[in-house]
Amino acid sequence: MSPKKRRMNDGATINSEKITTLELQVENLRSENEHLTSENESLKISTLERQVETLRSENERLTSQNKSLKQDLEITEPSPGQESTPTPDHLGTALNHVRDVASKLNITLREPNQGNEFSVLCGVVSQKWKLTSLKCFFQEYSGLPEIKGRVFCLEQISYNYAAVQDSVLGKDLTRCPAHERHHGECVWVSKRGSGWIVGSGRLSSGGKKGSRTVD
Image (cartoon, rainbow, N blue to C red; front, top):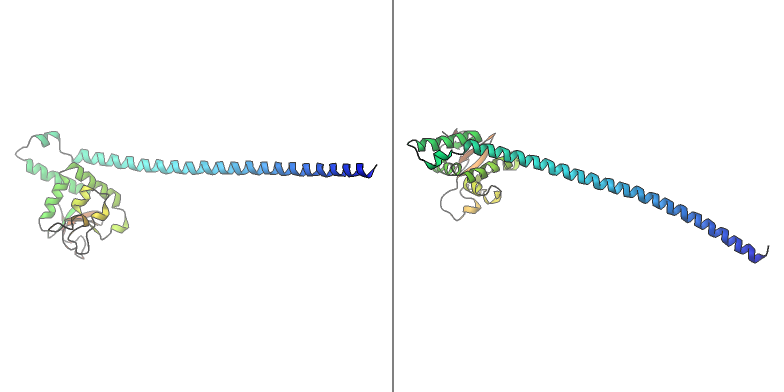
C-alpha cells in the first residue's frame, strides 16, 4: 500500500473515531438534557401545587371570616320593624343591642370613665358598616403580639380598620394621628386578655382592673 493510501486510511479511521466520540457526547448531552428538563418540570409543578395550596388555604380563611361576619350581622342587626317604626321602648331596644354586641365581642368599659366612652361605643355599634370594620379589626389583629399594650382610636378603627397606623395613639394617649388637630381626647380600644377594653386617657398599670362589662 502506498504511503498516500495509508495516510488516507489513517485519516478515515481517525474521523470515524471522532464521529463515534461525538455521537456518544451528543447522546450523553441528550440524556442529561432530558433529565434536567424532567427535574425542571417537576420543580415547576411542585411550585404551582404549593401556590395552589396556599391560595386554597387563604380562600378558606376568607370564606370562614366572611361567614362569621355574616352570622354576627344577622344576630346583631336590628330587625326592619325596629328601624322603621320607633316604639315606646326604642331606647331600651337600642341599649340592649349595644349590650348584646359588647357581650358577644367581649368589650368592657374602663372605670372610672369620662362619659364619652359609652357614647362613642354606641355610635360605632349602632351603625352596621362601622361595626363591621370594628369586627374585622378584632379578627385580624387580636392574635398579634405586637398590639399588646397599644391603644387604638375607636372611631378611626370603625372608619377604616386596615389603617392601623393612623389609629395608634401617642404616648400621651390623647389623640391619634388622624385626629391630631381635633380638640379633646380620642376614645381608645385596647386588647386586654381575651377581650377588649374601651376608655380614654392614660392606662392604669392594673390592666383590666377597674373595668366593667357594658350594661
